[in-house]
Amino acid sequence: MKKIKKRFTSFGSILMMVSFILMCIGIGFGVHAYMIGNGQVPVYAGQGYWSPAITSSNRIATTEFVNIQEDRAGYFTVPLPEGTDKTKVVISNISDSHMVLIRVPGADMDFYHRNPFSGDMNNVTGVKYGFDDDGAVVELDSDGVYEIDSNIEDDRLYIKLVPPQEIYDKILVINAAYGGDETGSVGYGLKEKDITLAVSEAIRNHVSGNDIGVYFTRTADVNVSSADRIKMINDVDADMVITLRVAGDEDTRITRGMNVLFYSVAEADAAQFMLDAISAKAKVIPNMTAYQAKGELQDSSDARFFGIDLAYITNKGDVSAYLDKTRVDRVGEAIAEAAEMLLKD
Image (cartoon, rainbow, N blue to C red; front, side, top):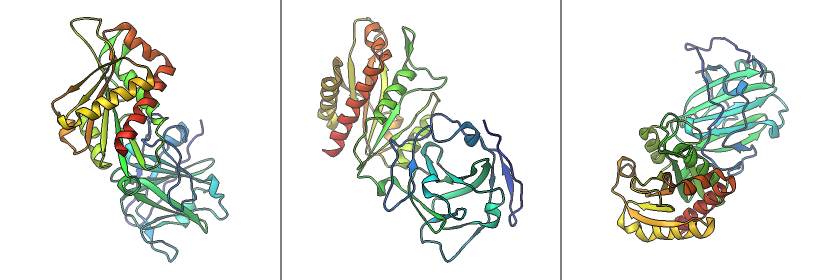
């Protein structure tokens, strides 16, 4: 692991040192690498783009910004070292932390003292930067969940935070139940939180529609509060929310199969379509669809809400099937396809 070099300096009237620690797992809601508009910079969402040395770096908060002729309306400007290879500049969109990380290769420890940031701060609430042996890491903090529009010209990165609603026709949120110290139901050595997370990750791998944005309330084994789940759903203005759960039957261990729950009587047919489509694609046993009274989550938004009971924790054969990675992947693919069909209907 590389040791992060720290720089302490003074900019204008305000300067502070912020020790910022990011978890290097469970980041991001997006489903793939992508480019938007005329962007020339790859924008990544998800795990695997930042080493622990980078994600745990101490970055310096700065409030020194200037306006220059080269700025573009609506864009924040990040100066780059002269001759920077644009293919080496990497942007990671850490949506669940309301953060964008920018890897700038070749920037020395004095670079942003000599070349301050500039441009439009729209939706940007703070800027920090730090260094390691490979260059600089710039962190943009935001006030919500955004997608990225970016371009590089003349050794400047122009970046804009764009609301998801301006990018996608429809927005789907996958809500994996429980996490962290909230295990959910437990049976036969399996925990509900692990099953729901595994299927959530499988869904992410199979979302294909470029006109559908998909976000995840949980992408790691962490306990996400109801308030944070609700905030994310509202931040992206979700059109559909699917909560992944595991059922149980206190009276018998015979009950098995998948349930699809709906929270509005108008969605009864849609729930049946989803159950039929998933069971046919993934070869799972359909059990039933059922109406559920709305809770805090469903009352928080006008989105279409569904719940999927993936299996019965009280049936060993039913729940143990999720130890099979092929089964998990097949179920994730089936849910993704069914949701996309309903959203396009």
